[in-house]
Length: 119
Length: 472
Image 1 (cartoon, rainbow over the protein chains, first blue to last red):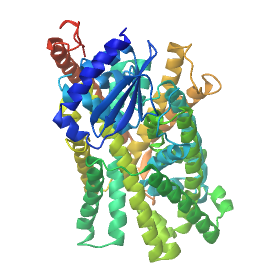
Image 2 (image 1 turned 45 degrees about the vertical axis):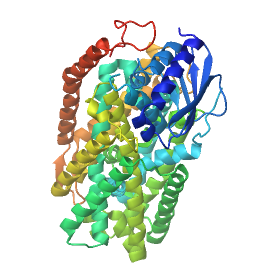
Image 3 (image 1 turned 30 degrees about the vertical axis):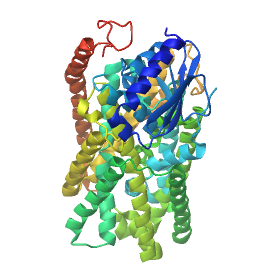
Image 4 (image 1 turned 180 degrees about the horizontal axis):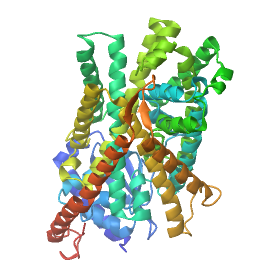
């Protein structure tokens, strides 16, 4: 089980990786979303702001009305943000649940695929 | 519980479900049904098929309420029978399903050729067919989306207009029920045979299940499917009778693939033709567009899961669309459409689509029973009533319809046999075997390679060793 601090640390790295990747920024340039991540085993919530493909902020807690809600185990969240997990596989196995449009689900997965293509 | 900023309304779920089923090839299927049963009684087979699809929709509803995800069908089967069977059936269903484009593009190209001449009928058909497929490919490639409201309006307008025109035709031409009942074509066997084909009219209603993640209440998907089938039942029942009574006996016997255009001409002359041309284009584009959108996303996900070659997971750098998947599927659809154009065997594809739907409904009914047994304590928002009775009945009905299709023959309107349907069975079995061989022989190679790659990859998460690298 990953703690809230571990997930926040992973999120910080995820933000740097995303924002420094020019290919990803170009692809997601028209993608602005408020995303909630729910760690179902610890009950923690996290909020992430994506503005024109850039992660502008993240914080603990569920703020605002989201466009996307991702629910999974804390370990999966942590591994996903560190780029150690293929979100598509977990999604297809039903371990990661996403409430969003199909396009947003794919764009979320694309972040991992672009930054860590070998995952 | 947190909710989403943008959630789908029941109206959109209904229009998506009905919109997928409402295609240009539905018109020819409606006439085909009328030809099997005694014309004016075609509605009986349409309703029988609709009721059967309602049962299947209930099974989908129960499964969706347990696994409300876009990965739906694969996940239902995977949890019931394991990953390998899920991959085999998933690929079989999705890839064979795209073959529908062959029939749809053939009929649409016939519609356009009969209305507008560019060079000559043969060349024009190839042009229209290519234009249709490439146009849909382009909007998918560019990631252009038809706005939900626009799609709602288009679908409901098409349904309403089809119902109004059908009622008008029936009231104008009149219906001789007594003669139809007395006809030697009106037999239980013919009604059921036509109902098997009638399933084709509803093809695709279940493709609304991937929208579960965009709703606030998963039960809305089930409710939406049931309403959509109900509406389609009424509209198709009316249209199947209208197209029969609205055509002349010569037109019925001509084996035309564009009965709706002839009907439009008989009713209103050129404006009637133009009206049905517009209906055809709208119906075909919306159906194929939604089909390609779903199928390309499925292919992308399969590639990301190391089931298909990695190249299918490539995303367009500007539009974020799975362009390789889209192009591959479009190439497949184009080749198939040209084969249909050359051979003219569009009914073969229609029979495949009807059989494929029957097959997947049998699988879904079996999944409901299996998952109930496997996870008896699982709570679901929706459960098919009457315990195992309805899922068993659903499975039995569609298995019967499937076998009925395979055992029958496809004939034109004069009764001339075009092909025995065991060819349909043979093609489907061959394709199923291909999917099975691929899953058993090729997928393990991809999975092994991915696992080896993952094993050598250093984990980035602090405190995680190389050995613990993520597998599969």
